Length: 462
Ligand code: GDP
Ligand code: GDP
Image 1 (cartoon, rainbow, N blue to C red):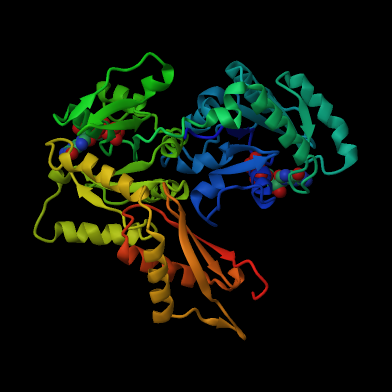
Image 2 (tube, helix red, strand yellow):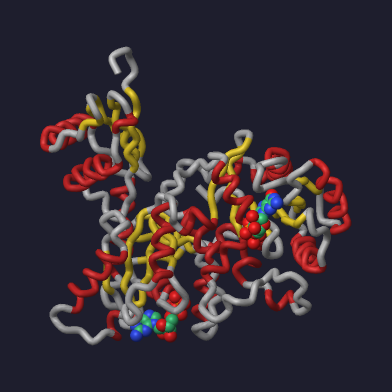
C-alpha cells in the first residue's frame, strides 16, 4: 500500500500549527494508535474524516530533526527578508511531498510579510491550498478572516485551534480538495492488494552507508535487477529478483543518485524516509558502527514501529571498528538497550565497503517478511494463551478478574491477534505485554510488531 495522501500544515511560527495538529489528535480522529510521547506522534498522524483517510504533518515540528547548528533560524520566520534561503529543507520537503497544503495565518494579527512569502512558495507548487485563519476565537474576529483572500492562494476558513471552532469546516475543505484529485481517493491509493512482493525500504541517517549498501545489493550475483519500466512510480523504486523471489526496494531514487555524487551532501528528508517506510513491509535500519547508536537512529526506529512495519538492523562499517572477542557482544548490548522498544530485531553486522556479510541481508529481510505473513494456527494459539493464563493469571481489580476466553489471529502482515475476554477494561498493559512475550517465546515474529486486541465476549454473562 502506498502512503496515504498527505496534508501539510504550513505557516510562519506562532500561528498555531502545532495547536491545530494537537487539536486534530485530541479529537480522536486519529486512526492509528498514537503512542504517547513518541516523535512520530508529534510530527505526523493519520486521520479519518467523512470516510477519507489521510495523513497530516505539522511542518513546524519537523525542525527538531535538523542537524545541530541550524536549529535557531526558523524557516518561516516572521518578517525575515532573506526568508527564502532560510526555508529549511525539511519544511520544504514536507510541502513537496504533500498533496494538499493548509496555510495557517493569525486572524488576530492580519496579513504579514512572512505570510505573503509563504503563500508565494505555496502558490508555486500549484497544489491545492486552504487558508486557515486561526485564533478566530470569537465570532467578531472572523471578520478579519476575509482579508486573507488577498494572499490569493485559496479559500479562507476561520478557525480557532484552541477552541476547536471551524475545524470541521476546514476538514470538509481538505477532504473536498483530496477528492477533487481522483488519484487521491482512498480506493485509488491502494496498490493492488495482491502485490505480495517483498517491499524493502533502506533508511538511516546521512552517511551511514545506505547508498553503498544499495550498490552492494544490486551488484550481488544472486540478484537480478529488472530493467525499469517507463512509469514514474517505477523509476523511484528498484525491482530485483532474489532466488526467484520478486523484491521491491522502495524509493531508491535519492539513494541511487547520491551514490554517483560526492558523499556527505544528502538532503536528508524525514518525510521522504517516512513515506518510504509506509510503503514498505520491511525497513533496513542502517546504523554506523563507528558512531554507535544515536538519538536520530532511535527516532527513525520509532517511525518504523509506529508505522507497524518490520525492522532489520544493519550495523554497517564493521570493517572500520577495532574489534576484539567482545566487540560484537558490547554492540549488541547497546542495541538491546537503546532499541528496547523494537520487537526482537534481527541484527546483521556488515561492511558495505568490503562486502562482508552482505549476502545475509536479503535473506534476513525475506525471513522477516515470512514472519510478517505467518499465521498461528488457532488451536496452538489457544493452548498457548491458556498455558500463559494458568502460569500467571491476570491480577484482579477489586472483585473482578480478567478472564481470557478465546483467541485467534485474524490478520497477518502485520499480525493481529484478537482475544475475547470477559471485560476488555480489565486488561492491564503489563498483562498485555506478558501475553505478547509468551507468544513471542514460541513464535519469534522477528523484527515484527504484533498487535493484541481485546474484545468483550458477546453474551450476557460478562
Ligand atoms: P506554531 O508555532 O505555528 O506551531 O504555533 P503554536 O501552535 O505553538 O501556537 C502559538 C501560540 O498561539 C500559542 O501561544 C498558542 O496558545 C496560540 N494559539 C494557537 N491557536 C490559537 C487559537 O485558536 N486562539 C488563540 N487565541 N490562540 C491560539
Ligand atoms: P548514505 O548517506 O547513507 O547513503 O552513505 P554512503 O553510502 O554515501 O556512505 C557514506 C560514507 O561512508 C562514504 O564515504 C562511504 O565510502 C563510507 N562507507 C559506506 N559504507 C562503509 C563501510 O562499510 N565501511 C567503511 N569504512 N566506510 C563505509
